[in-house]
Image 1 (tube, rainbow, N blue to C red):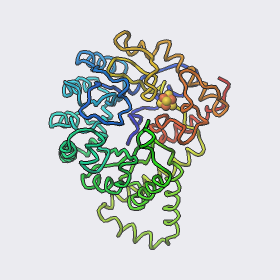
Image 2 (cartoon, helix red, strand yellow):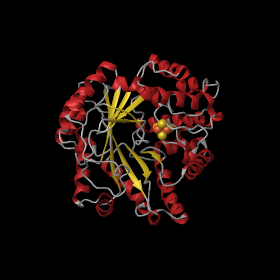
Image 3 (cartoon, rainbow, N blue to C red):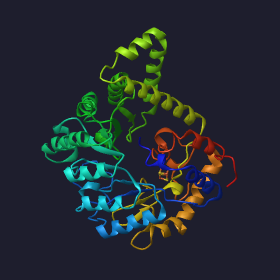
Image 4 (tube, rainbow, N blue to C red):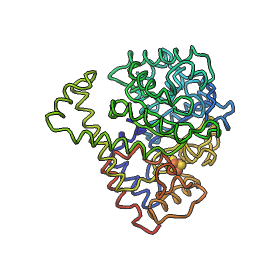
Length: 424
Ligand code: SF4
């Protein structure tokens, strides 16, 4: 889950990425495309990070149709709808979904505020076998929702109803539904309530994130952060990553706090004798079936292995060999994070021309140096920020640089063979 289509790659695709890094070329791709269909939004969140650049742009149905055709021609494996604005606020949302379905690329997912998840949209998403829907519900009650999203309280309940219906109507448990909560100074004391709401609605997973670019008066003090962590500890102890997919913050680095909690939970567990462990496995968490419990055990092993690999191997950004983002104004930014740096525009060039064009060549050249030099790479360049550099860890590293391939351990090992091993 949350691998933005990485699972759909075959052996050859991955070889192409590794060889592409070594030789500084693109032998394939883009294999995944993120599309921001519209600048419009159905909520008016005070913390929206793209407000600064949103106008009234929208990719027309004709443009989406051309994108879809090109995706098919280029063999794009998957796509994701996100924003920019709210993807399901597009005036012709049903039609664009159908049009993108013709590309034969898998619909990996949509990140939405949930307002546009009407009956038709739900049906189309289910028909397209969309893998996941991330709903930014952000908080646990109508009052905070109104404050954060600046809409009437009814919208909160409307979104919850849409999500419940999607869960009821979906087939083969797809799409997986993820609730995203945005925790900050004014709502951190309802973290337990958020967790309970997600369980009550029946979503598959939960992500806790934070807000960025906050005004000074909205930033948390040390004691508030500690209190927030105590709530996270409370739910992590109960949940043990059954529902919780991750706990992050854009406001501050809480990685060490979370690691400490994980260590404490692990130590407590290891103190129990084998009989106690078996009894707990059978008798505790009765709301989960035996199959779910076994799945969770497997998941925890993978999580442990992921940590082991991350301690051992650096995790570079391989985006210029894997994916490309198209904004609602047709612009193709360097990545979904650094949207002020542009690589081209689909109204001027085809996706293929942009992907194979001068700017992407330069982007690959710069990122290749980061990877091949590893920790010896020092110099920040125009297309490479401090967050992209491999010596950056925790808060200063980019959260989007590797999450999608980190559980592909054979691929991580192949990366290990090239990171820091060459002069670029
Ligand atoms: S590391 Fe992050 S900011 Fe840098 S290019 Fe990759 S996705 Fe963009």
